[in-house]
Image 1 (cartoon, rainbow, N blue to C red):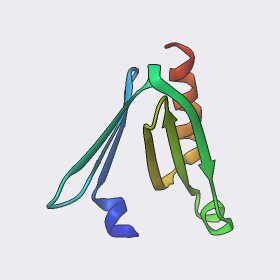
Image 2: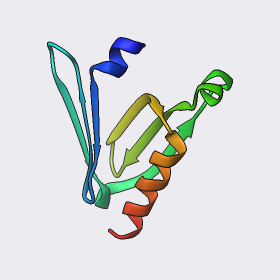
Image 3: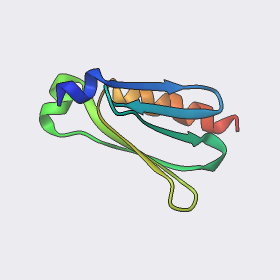
Length: 87
């Protein structure tokens, strides 16, 4: 759980969401906000206490990006929705 968190980079720009995972092997996911349909947030009781959560961003077609155990998930969801409004 913590190793994945330490080896994951997330970037939110005004055009896209970029997630890079891995220490040795690298996996990169990108999603453009003009193809974004939903931003779903799930929090367990423990995650609410710790201020973290899991987020799934779904795009048109079959595109989907999942972010697990992110800090301040409500803030991230709010920022994504703000960017989506201006697209």
